[in-house]
Each structure stands twice: as C-alpha cells, then as structure tokens.
Image 1 (cartoon, rainbow, N blue to C red):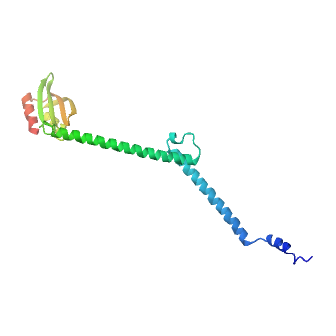
Image 2 (image 1 turned 90 degrees about the vertical axis):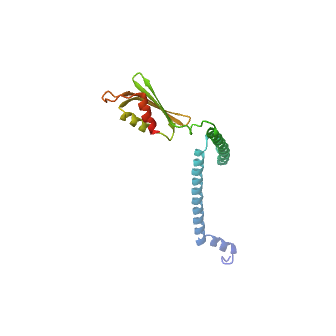
Image 3 (image 1 turned 135 degrees about the horizontal axis):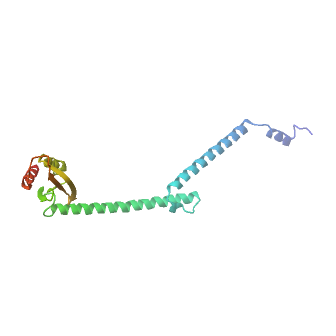
Length: 195
C-alpha cells in the first residue's frame, strides 16, 4: 500500500503538526479564564460590601447573592417610604410652628411689642434688680456695667428666657470700698436710661 494514496494517514499526520492558530486559541482561553476569575472576585467583593451595608433583618439567613440583591431592593424601598413619612412629619411640624408663631404675633400683648422694663427691690444684703427685655434688646453686660459704675457689687445673676424675652435677675450689694450710697429709685432710673 502506498502511504501517499491513503487519505486517512495523511489526515492523521496533518493533525499532529502544531499550527500557529492552536497556540493563539490556547492563549485566548487562558486570558478569558483569567478575566472571568478576576470578574468573579470583584463581584464577590462587591456583594460582600453590599451585605455589610444592609441591616441584618434584610439578609438574615440568606446566602445567595440574588437574595442579597432582593434584600437591598427591599431596604431601599423601605428607606424611601420612611424618608417620605419623615418629610411629611417635618412639614406638618413646620406648619404648626408657623401657625403658632403667627397666632402669637397677631395676638394682643405680644411679647415682642412690649417695652423693656426694670424693677429694683430692696433685699437683705442690698438690692434685687429684675430687667425684662426682648431677646435682641438690652445685653446683660451693659446692665452689669451700669451697676458696677454705681458702686454696686454683683452677688448673683440669673438669666432666663420666657416667651421670647430675656429676664435678668441680679442681686447686688453696695461695695463697702465705694463711698457711694444708692437707693433703689436711683438705680432704677439709671438702668431705665439704657432702655
């Protein structure tokens, strides 16, 4: 038998000869495997990150990635609903505050329109000075400055906010080193000049 005439042997012999195309196919397969492995690793990292950001009640007992995605969707929907509820509550509170503020302003005897007042009363060790002014009115430092100029020593001071007004209650006594003798009327007159 002539080997050249036998087509089966020729084909068989040709298949064992390495081709350039076979090498590139193997390289492409390896490259594809590496790319796919890297993609799976990145996806695993991303799903782990997603799991770590979800509250436990949305992923409890679930291991499949699709369950985690569904849990994330449920969490997002619940969060959006909660945001809408809180926004509605905030708007409701804002309306209540503005309604209350407008009623306070329109009502008779609004605290903003009342003038500042000063009251001086004698007490055991000296005088008690009570000053009432609007929140942006007479500062406490100015009141204390006038009292000090009159030779009075501050024993105690209390500041309170009542109906958007500031109330200063100051207990003073006459400074023993100063030769000044003041009475309540003079102190009240000097503080009224500040108003």
